[in-house]
Length: 319
Length: 276
Image (cartoon, each protein chain N blue to C red):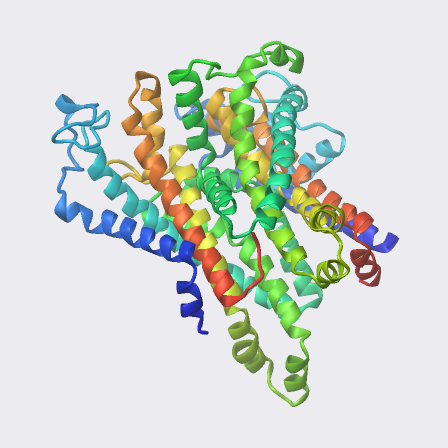
């Protein structure tokens, strides 16, 4: 088992390294390189050369990549081209705000979706299942930006209950001082996650309800309520927990959009501003954070499953 | 019971299929019945609310929204379907090779997939869109190339489990060649899973097209798609121009729902246990 965990850790590191290679190469493929992006199309060749020399962009790509890695290991992501501060500072300011948004909306989604999924599965084929399933289907098919727009039209325009723009603030505390402005962004994030989780939970519960142990329990005369909540629920949770880790990229992808829709001052908005201004160090930094979070998420999911599911433990030990 | 009759027994799948046919007819035959000028702007009649002459009003450049919905739908559907098929094809081959070969090649191929999962597709599309001029074909290819990861994982899992089945082992022992095993036994047995996943892949691609266009990286004007219509309409949300936003948004939701309904039905009809 220790070997399995070590193996997974090594693989995770390799994947993160591969991500840095891909992002690094992609960003240097951009027409004119970073210099054009920063100095603009009117920059003279002399200006571009000076910039490249100052930033080390005149060296060979592998050398630049190595320099980049060395700085990375020292916790240095470089300085933003446009915002006069180190990328790590920018990320440090923005990450807590994005985490606030994603964690709250994911938790809300879980709290609602899991019981709903079980309830749908138990009432499979009844009208209430059809209605809620149709609802989650529609929610699943709704792009986050359209959902955000609908929320804005409904709850900021038709019924002016909440502002359409998130509060701006340096710290999480400042954001929390205007909780009303967080409602719509959080709802938009919740909606997307809710659809995925409840569909998954419904399917997982249905699978478990068809298992032999359920039939045995029924044959013994175990009350249906006990079967569902004592036997099926923990088993279905296991598979959903393992899915949560893989859901990390979707969460971040969603927050990129939600943040730009509501002008929410998190990592997503930082990403869009950086993309518009060709601010490469910031872009690399954001993508790296997302990649590490994704890899960590799936690693955590696998390890969690190892903890709660003995079958994986045996298989893992063997491989 | 055949797959088709099992599929027809599912009301949601049939409803999804009918809805899809209607949308396709609307987008491709609609313009013949309801002709509108979608290439010349008409600023004199810009942003008219829905009424006679323009059932869904006009947009900020004076295009008839109903007609625009049809033209945009063609772009969205064509790119979505192409991208979904490209993603499925790449993923299926990638996963089958990884799963069937095993060993170090499997490890390498699947680490590439892990890497792809860790990089947000939107980021890749963003960079790619600055390198090339988006057209229908280019967008389909780009979106296909960033969304083959799920089918690759699925196909690998399927191949690995098939490879270990007794009958495959038996024919391998009997001397069947690797090519024969792959083409006669593994691929035909995995086709259900792949076909079902292809529908979800198309649905996801249609969503991704919308995202890409929404970010302003879609097909250049006067061509448009549902995502671009939405992104243009946003500016007028607070002026109450709901007819610029709700029609394309609802169209996206309807099509994606319909395809997912059909996919779910297909999965049950093939008796495939799979994702979602």
